[in-house]
Amino acid sequence: MQSVPAIPDILKLKKASGTQRRFQDNLVIVLFLLPALILFLLFVIYPIFQSVYYSLFNWKGFGPAVDFVGLDNFKNILVDRVFLIALRNGFFIIVFSLLLQLPLSMLLAVLVGRDLPGRVFFRTIFFMPFVLSEVITALMWLFLFNPDPERGFLNAIVVLFGAKPVPWLGNTDIVLLVIFVVLTWKYFGFHMLLYLTGLQNIPTELEEAARIDGANALQSFFRITLPLLGTTIRTSVYLSVIGSIQQFILVWIMTKGGPVNASETLATYMYRFGFVRFQLGYGSAVAIYMFLICVIFSLVYQRLTRRPDYLTGL
Image (tube, rainbow, N blue to C red; front, side):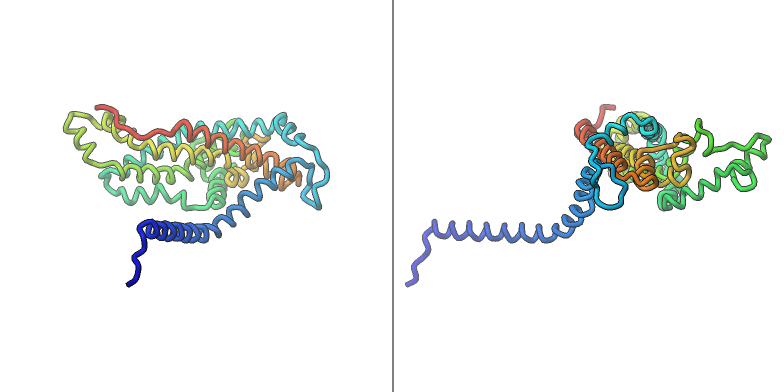
C-alpha cells in the first residue's frame, strides 16, 4: 500500500506551489512592463540626468563639455530680467486659464450636456479646435491677426468700422491677451470634454430628487453637480497649469516671445538659449528649473487636493 503524505508535507507542497505561481505571475508582469520601462528610462530618466550634467557646463553643443561652471548658470538665470518676465507671463496665463478658460469650458459642458437642441452638433464644433495641431492653429490665427487690413481678417473689420488697424501681435500691452485668446480657443474644447465625462457619471436621480425637494437649477448645480465634479475639476486644473508652464509651440510660431519679450514663456526662453544661441548648458539649466517647478507644483497640488468628493446639503 502507498503511504499517504502527512499533513505538514501537504502544506509544504502547497506553499511551494503557491510561491512558484507567484514567481511566475511576477515574472510575466515584469516581462510585459520591461519594454515600457526601457523606453521610460531611455527617453525620460536619461535626458533628465543628462540635462543636469550639461547644466553645470558652459557648453555650446559641439564636442565634449569641458568648461565647468558649477551653479553659475542657475545663478545667472535668476537675475536675468527676461527669465523673470517669462515667469510672470506663465503666472498670468495660469491665472487667466483658471478664472476664464476653465469656467467657460464648464459652462459649455453643462449647456451641451443637457437636452439642448442640436447638442451633438455643438459638441463637435466646440471640440474641433482641439483636434487641430498647434502649428495649424498658430498659422491660422496669424492670418487673422495680420496687421495689414488687406490680409488680416480682424483688422479688415476694424477698418470697416472706421478705426485704425491694430497691431495685435506687435503691441506689448495686448500681445499676451491675444495669445491667451488663441490658447483658450484651442484648449477649451478639451476641458469641456473632461467636464462632459464627469457630468455623465453623475446620477440623474440626484438632480430629480433635488427638484422634487424644491431646489432650483442654481441650487442643484452648486450643491450637487459642482461638488460631484470635484475630481474632474482637480484634473482639469492640474492639466491646465502644467500645460501653461510648458506652453511653447503657439507662442513661438506667433510671436517668438516678442515683441520685446512681452510674450516670453519659460519654454520659449529655454529654446532661445538652447537651440537658437547654442548655449545648451544655460538652456539645460532653464529646463531643470521648469522641471522643478512642475514637480513641486504636482506634489503640493496632489497633497492639497487629496480628498473625496462629497455632497452638500440642500
